[in-house]
Length: 440
Image (tube, rainbow, N blue to C red; front, side, top):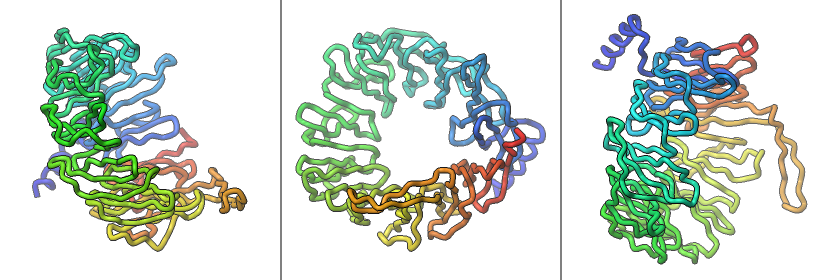
């Protein structure tokens, strides 16, 4: 009930104000528009060549086009109002503050466009505590760079720390940094002082309360104090999220660890030369005779040929690609490992709407020729024949392949082009917003 009342109130406010809380950027070949969720035009095509969102809520955008022969961006609110002049190289949103580059140097401003730090730094990062850490010299040469602290009022103080590397991002109140004193990694705090002394051959950003680090003996995990919680003895260690640390030994054995307890979760007995990829909730094991898909518990979900590859789908599904490019080599894999009956030439995840998953697919004309050297059919595709469509998680066709271009937008919408008409549609194919490119 509250959401409905809020929607009514918002509609009334929109009659009195240009503010909007959920705008959508729609980009075309050489122009762009900003619209609301109902398709009402906020910024008309022709104002900017490109518009993109800085946040996930559709309240802050960048609008860019050529200004006197140079591409420049302006910061926009959700109503399309300019919050700055169109005089910036790029914008980034970090810790609720907008970082920007201007003439190749970094500065910072509020989300309202008020400058906090002038563009005078070669690198600048939010320290997560209302201030920034920065350097003023070339971070890519072999000379030490002094680290500076900039407070919320823009006051600059030298920290006394010198680095030979680039600045990373803060997590857990710490940022990894390469020391110019001993060429080892440590961690600085929000004030730019060493909180964990430089002692690691490598140290990455903290993910939760763990970070990937290494010594000459190998890779392991450390906690926020810099103490080892997983012994640095592994030839290769991947740590991409808080759910899994994944080690690979030279003999092809792979081990999954719980990053919190560092207890072994599973072990895969591979062979020397096997390659693994662990990210986004799945583990892929590439061997000489097969490619296998595991989840983060070590459960084998599917096994394909040595040429197979997998990708995360939606709603617990996966996408299998197993075959020669151009053939119908893509299928959906359900969580239980079963495959969709139908196959497609290309398949990619879009989004979920009301709990149902949707995928985009490509259909195109090919010519085939048998390769004696490879012992298989090889396909040449006609790029002009490419058309995009949509299927749901069951594999049922929702939209036939008739669109020349397709990409996912916010709120279960699609940016498509069909002939000279381009714009935004819902997943049923109804136009929410469109323009005729031939007339623009």
